[in-house]
Image 1 (cartoon, one colour):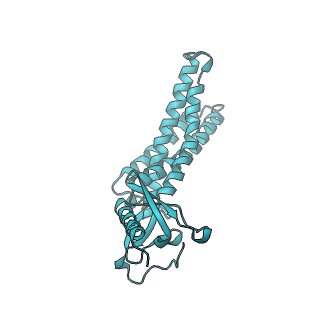
Image 2 (cartoon, rainbow, N blue to C red):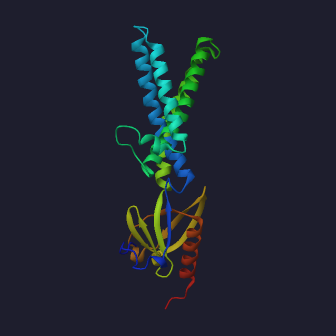
Image 3 (tube, rainbow, N blue to C red):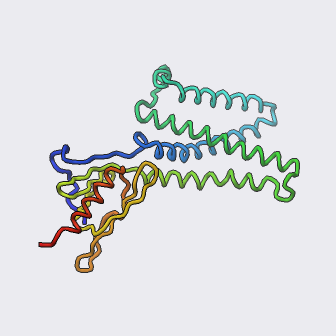
Length: 244
């Protein structure tokens, strides 16, 4: 059952946590590869379009050199220890702080996934031209390259699911979720089960149904292992306590 989403006045009494791209490598990697895949696909499409158009005027080498220079410049910027200071020299506004880190992660993800997609397409082209797989041609490699799109969507969904910001009040037995704002009263939770997923734990909540009524609230939350242990311990104590 949801209770008032306002947190207690004294935050020192709460066990707080934050799981996002700034605190979890898994979330950061999933987000980077997911977003990077879409940027990579768009870049490849634009490149091949320009490459084909300039083929009629003999400017393909210029397109290749231009894209190579852009990629090398972006890679050098994102791996530099002074990315922010380099960008400050540009005549237009640039991101900073967390936004800059997210942009750098997206750029690295795009470069990595772009290299994978181009490699698969290149192998497929080579196999097809040399008839190494017979009637299959470049099909398997083209299929693998196309498969990166649904995999990228899956990575973004997973990164969103693993994100979690909240606090647990061990005295009141209430879990406060901040994104979105919601509060869960553990007095209506019969049992909990936990399952480790990387550096986090998925906590499944089994709600009681007083009078056969459905109790609204999240059925699964993702929290750090220490928070999961506290929640599980509280529910076990509460369920084993003798009723008045």
